[in-house]
Length: 527
Image 1 (spheres, rainbow, N blue to C red):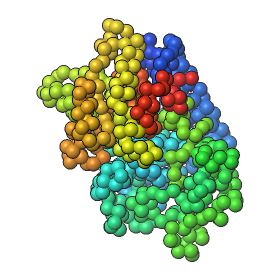
Image 2: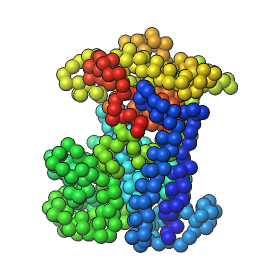
Image 3: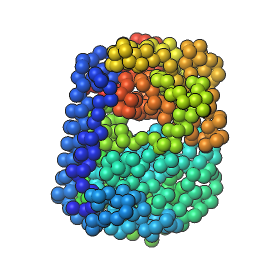
Image 4: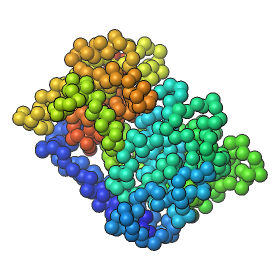
């Protein structure tokens, strides 16, 4: 078997990540108002998901043993004793080159995708791609997160994923090497992006490549690939080939269920699956050439060594919108193991200490707190004409939910625990209205907004958002906003990393959460 991938070791890695983080911890109670002492629920879920994943991998490995180019066992300094090499430099020919093909090792196959837009959305795309890389036995290549004016304004930096998340730690946990585009091809990484200037992509020459387009297949109202600025940033000219209809997770007449199956996409990356897909009527009838000369584009099919997709946001393993479900295989394999970098954790600690008035030379620890995420401004277009103050949940709704998780902490840890009476609350939000923040402070709560300008100036415009995400994950419990993917993943991090309960507040009217006694069912992780 190839030294690159060994399913048994991956299964052990998944099972080793199962842990109970607090005595008497009740996973059944998380996300609900009632629950029994079913401590083993999450262990069972992880074991089942691990078994399902292993089964898929073994099937690909046994039936298609030559799909991954065989390489000799490598034993060298810095390599694992088992022979698996996790150092990214082993999987490229050298430093980043002007053309990506010059740097890909012919002994391996790779996979990439293009970003969706926004910090959490891009995080989800890269997690989905890494999962697909594992089950198809390819090496993922992650792109930088590009700034959108709606999120961080004009002129912000293209920030590399590895600056935010600890990729070596993830690679070790899932036993899969992980590359970034900065390992492969030259571009202006970690520098301001100006979409009006062509010289943003200087440093890398134009590469022609073929990629699969999922968007017009899963969304019948669309005829073109999903738009992304990443091909422009990397100076890639792409011939898009529409994926066949059988990649849809749900093949029915309901066009609203636009979700691609990750298992079906793995099939496309197998020799016979690729041939079947290229023979489908959609394949050559819906090709988009991106202004590539016809004498060039007619010869370009989806790349086999570096497989690529236009969008891996709307995908799932067993159901649509899995990030809202209890059973979320991508989270169980990738997300829970994708921790923030130590640099980011140190920055979060610095600002938490300042928030709590702890001097830099003090040895006092950051006190336990409940993290809160209130999403406001960019939800206005979902309010159906209502003013934001009539559509968004009031702070009283968040206060009610904070009280609930405080009570759950006391129940989970017992009256003698320091977590039995957590009164500190740290609020993160995209709201900029000082009047609203004054109401937050009247509740005795702290807010990270006072550091936003300083963080943006000192570290870059992405940092207020990503430091908020790191601070959210530090909470001993979490209260977020229903419908926000940032809240969804903060809840999962607090659950897995802190052993804490969470609640999500409903909105779209002032009393939406008050009139709803339970939790948002689709975000209830309980069985």
